Amino acid sequence: MKTGIMLLNLGGPDNLSSVRPFLYNLFSDRQIIPLGPAPLQKPIALLISLFRAPKTRSAYKLIGGGSPIYEITLKQAELLSKSLDGMPVYVGMRYWRPFIEDEVKRAKDDGIEKLIGLSLYPHYSRATTGSTRDVFLRATKEQGIEADFIEHWYDHPLYIRALVDLISKNLNWADVLLFSAHSLPESFIKEGDPYLDHILGTIKAVMRLLKSERKAPPYMLSFQSRSGPVKWLEPSTDEAIKELAKKGVKNILVVPVSFVSDHIETLYEIDILYKEMAEKEGVNLHRVDSLNTHPVFIEALKDLVKRRLQPQ
Image 1 (spheres, rainbow, N blue to C red):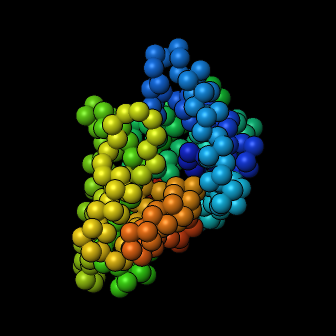
Image 2: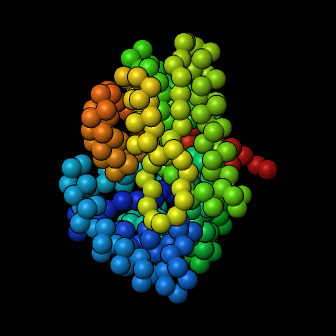
């Protein structure tokens, strides 16, 4: 059976004209955030995308005019394929090109009979991995391809090792580590979504390894990228920065714990927005590099795939 891998991620607008349709696709997904009654989801998403697009375009202008997430994921795919002796590795995005459905069809045209979907969200949430999994499994079924899906790996030893390697580069400078994760509506957690437990599991594993190798500073967890009129996980990253400043902290090292590739949340929200906010509070803020194509991270992806390739 000819087998391939598909790396699955959120996606991002590749240019400024793509921002509005990307936002529409994002807010049309009820698994991310329900917007009123189901029949009104897409009309409300259209209004939100029209309203938010100008501000969002301004942010993308500051990071080069588009998201680098596809190019980074494509490079991850190339390195993963090489590490797997040339096994085909595709890239499918949920909310912008190349869409998951189109890439599954491409895999079918290439003669792929089985496709292993690998979610690039380390921590499972129905809003991210769940939504992506549903689209992937529906697309593979429509194409008649056997499917497997790797839905979380928040405590994989090589993933933790890669994070610790990146954190250690700036550790001597930091007074505190601020783990910043993408926020989620509190209602999701109350309904049993494991996302917060997975985030805490990653942080626990990181701190355990870090402390086994060197003296580590205190740490804190915060949440970023909130949108919509619902109650989100707290504290927000901007609130955490202000709280640490009031306590006299001068050097904050931000660890973007739920993001494996650079995109607007790291390049704009942390590197520009939060950094300027910290400066106004008299605080120096720096960010740990994203995993991107870190060799140990690629080894983690390779190990996840190889485990699925072993006979059950």
